[in-house]
Length: 278
Image (cartoon, rainbow, N blue to C red; front, side, top):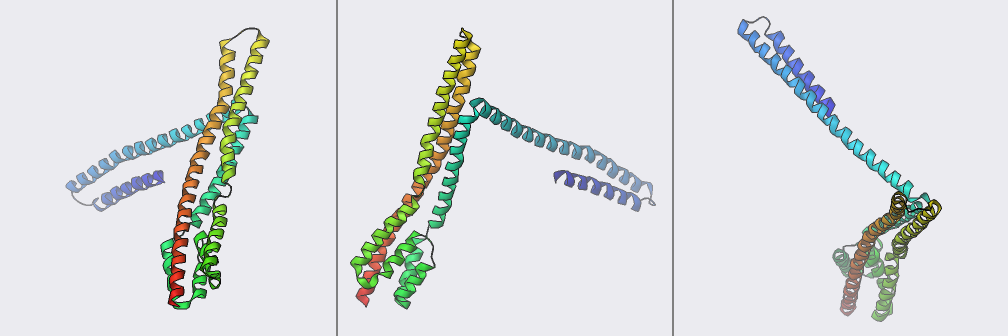
């Protein structure tokens, strides 16, 4: 795109110079001198634009070269670490990230503006009664609205029953929020263990090679240890990445649970006032 703009600018300047030259061709010599000056300016601008285009091409080539080198390095280290253990560590990363992203999407969809929901439920109770409030909760997504609906559905059985229903269903919603977190924590624990196992096996293979050679060669020892430690580094990196996601998810769940508890108390107070008014 930048090359196209540069070419358009060059052709535009050339066309402008040609137009000026054509218009001033029949005039006196001072006009021809102006045309010559414009042509010289265009001639000066063309190398500048070409140099800018070449600089852009050089930067793009350098970036592509950097990405290619990084890809080649990662592939080389993966092969050196051993396809077996490195593949297992990579699978833990893939599964862990898949579950983490699923939880992130679920928790974002579960987030609700509790203040707005409480105001809507209160207005519905005052204007249309319990059925109108239940309709508001039915049309609102998130665990808070589901808890409200369960409580409103049992309002005829008394406030005590409503409170027990809200508490029980709140526990159910908390379990849904924490779904798959145990699997993510499992992958966090497994990834470095697989890395350490690959390291130990790599060290054993290095010592076997030393035993077969009958001599301790620095090249053999260094090469074996380097290959063995690649799996450990990879496992630790995977664990760190998944741990960041895990902590983020836990903080999100804690925030939603706190909102659920506060909103449930506000709902019970609202229902008590509504029954007293009746």
